[in-house]
Image (cartoon, rainbow, N blue to C red; front, side, top):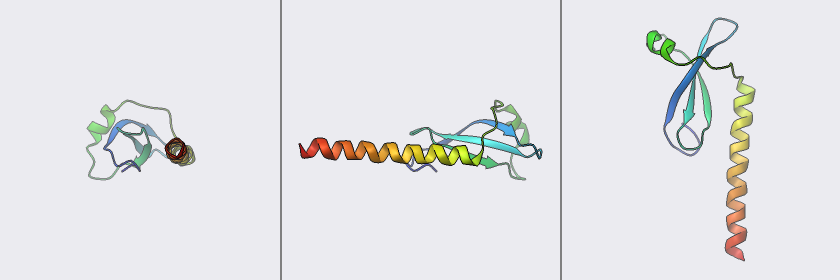
Length: 85
């Protein structure tokens, strides 16, 4: 789940150099992305039906999460300044 609490939707997949498949989920509210390795009980045909996307690293995903958090805090700060005026 994302920090905003909205639903996550699978948007694509990629394959790591070690042959492991990863599903990319995106939040429908804030566009936060999460990487999930496939599980043994996942429907592999359904995974292969997802579009292939460029590989993402966990570092890039964490950077995106931090940017979203800072943007949310900045927006809250702006509203508090406007309300105080």
